[in-house]
Length: 422
Image 1 (cartoon, rainbow, N blue to C red):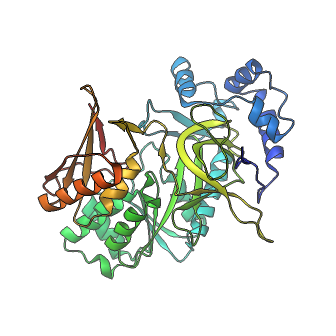
Image 2 (cartoon, rainbow, N blue to C red):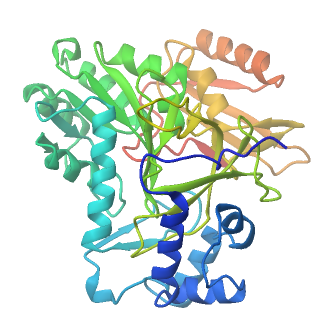
């Protein structure tokens, strides 16, 4: 088997040193991992990277949900007494029951530094006014990004509590140069601005930093975004509430995400067997949080499908882990329709490759003998027919496409929920 992409060096501390330090810190006081490690006979810590990946057990979301259900409200995964924690955030619940996640000031500051690294890679400086088109609810979302932008000296505009039309006016009137939101909401924001008679072309947005959906690394979605926001470039990033910010787009390589290995030990494994996959092969991303020890996750199966490679080495920076194509999908997102494996990201790439389509919605009907797929799209009947033709060509599957009126499908500023299962 080819060398797995976990075998890499790091611009930060040696990964083994970080893993040993993490295990030593949590094993004595973190009830969840103390119990888990004792059962696996690995409380003494890893002797090597190979020992860590071979002997230490995975952590799954199902375990975390069960732990918080049995020990409400926060479970037993806290390393320190509750009095040390100052932040509480909650997962979106789009892939199961939501989780509550706590942070100490130290762990929050470490993640804020990671977001400063995201901004640096995106070319954001103190001279950039940044607009955050986000609800600022219980999700981790762009809370960290907002505070990181403040830390580097940006003028920050929180868009929580505003309607879409007002957000468009505020960011244009204040000359904002950076927009942070989901890919779907960036498209909706541009469409709303035009409907309100606002000239986006005269705005100053030069960078759109997106997260929450895979669209930021899909060429067709990126092209739609940059067409909707003239003069702007899309910059992708991904993270999760329970682990924090994980990656940022490699400058000059759209569609490639770099893992922040200062903060994570990353592996890519076969979703079915848990065995490491070779470099360039698709597998599930597994993360260990090296600097979020107050609420740690060790060998956490994220459910994200990725294709990892090692970046080229240079005299200035050792190789790091690159995710080619960004987040390709989720392990539990794949559906089988008449023998064809389909991921939502593949459908989005086809939909966004056509001009003249607003929002869309996919219905997966599993009530019959065979699963059936159908799409509603805000477009004309002619374009709907062309979309059906392209889906058939790309997927070898006939998918009926119905044209619906503009504005008739739901929008969200958070992760878009386009797939409905019956």
